[in-house]
Length: 89
Length: 156
Image 1 (cartoon, helix red, strand yellow):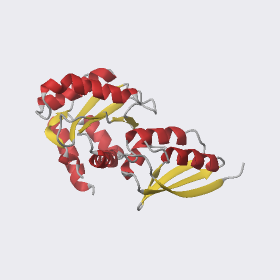
Image 2 (image 1 turned 90 degrees about the vertical axis):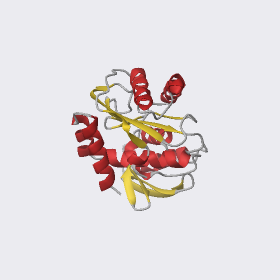
Image 3 (image 1 turned 180 degrees about the vertical axis):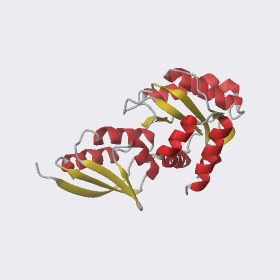
Image 4 (image 1 turned 30 degrees about the vertical axis):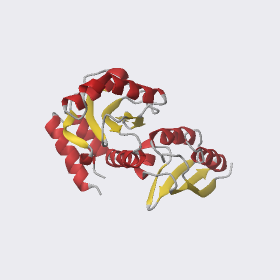
């Protein structure tokens, strides 16, 4: 399968930002995909399959993050992760 | 935000003895009570809140680190306890690894901002493998504190 690279800017909608629970959910979803997944905010880019990495960003509600997936299932990965980040909880 | 902004020097244990999840939560709350950071009368309530949070999903965040946390107005600002287990505790982490390093975090209601910042700070420091290893091998509370304070000063 072809390797794809998809990048997408997303606004965090979760009420309390990317705190521990959404970060754990994010990683659980990210781990279902073979693609390499990163999350960027400001000048920092972290591994999207590491809870600690995501927490490091301290992404509050309304902040903009950059999701990037590289791999054969990049498209599905971004779609699923975006869905999680759009949840208002 | 620095770790030492919300961790008092007394709320540290270099030798967590509990071997399972519930006992660790109790022991960490005990550390906070002994440090004088929370009133003893809140003990059972806090343990229940922490357990309820764990039931939603483990607060183990990988690499042998756990951050049990709860919101409660028995603290007026963000308050933490720190503990190291030499043997490691099964904390139902996503990566299946035992947890050695614990940061217990209590936040008053309506403090999502500071809570998120504290999580970010803890994660930023604990991402460093060398830092984690030195905490695990620290002999006593004094050394643990020194290691945390040094790293806290070093990192922006």
